[in-house]
Image (cartoon, rainbow, N blue to C red):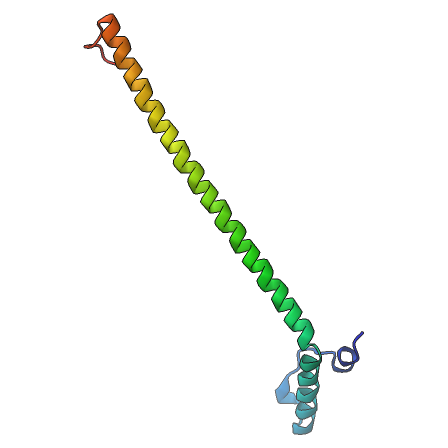
Length: 102
């Protein structure tokens, strides 16, 4: 265990119950613990930032692909509907059923 971790063992402390001297000692230990771990905090923050950036990129790719798939699917459905409608009209003309209701 890091010496500062063992020494400061930071817990929730009611600062109002400490004397002025105790609160100064506690604050100094807390500040020292943070300073000792600054590099670790920076690594953790950098890792979280990289993970967040990757998650945002993945989400952007996912939603872009979903949008493109939806547009392609809708286009295919429209083309299919037009094609079916044209074939239906050709079939009706061929057999003389232009007045028939579909």
